[in-house]
Structures are given as C-alpha cells and as structure tokens.
Image (cartoon, rainbow, N blue to C red; front, side):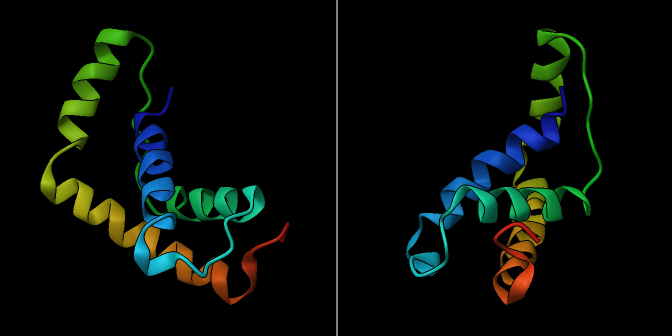
Amino acid sequence: MNVTEEIVRGLVRFLLYGVEYQTFCHCEQCEMNIIAEALNNLLPQYVTSHVAREEAFKILNTPQNIEAINKEIIHAIHKVGQGLGHGE
C-alpha cells in the first residue's frame, strides 16, 4: 500500500468539500484526476504491513509534510479545474 496515496485521498476529500472549493466539480472522475495529478508530483511511500504503515504515516503526518502535500493537491485542483477533469 502507498501511504502517500492514503493521505492524499483524505486531504483531497477534505479540501474539495471545504469553503474554498464549494463551486468546484465534485464528481468521482475529477476527484480521481486530482489525486492522480498530486501523486505524480509526490514521492510514494510503499509499505507491506500494518506496522510499517503506522511508521510511514507518523513520518508523513507532520505539519511540514502535510503543507507540502496540500500545495501539490491545490496545484492539482487548479490544473484539473482548467481542463483536465471529466475523464481526460
């Protein structure tokens, strides 16, 4: 499992349903495009056990890492909003 992907998925859902992106398309395809675009610009963190997942999550779940991940997600939201959504 890719712990980075797990974190990105949660943050994308959180950001998309926040006040700032209320008017953004919330369809599954746009959400998946945002996740894919953000993940393409982040380092994966693959693990094979629950213990390793917990350790990786602790490492990734710091204010600095979350800020960097959020920046990539916001960039991806804007990119998808400019035309990469709806199956493209």
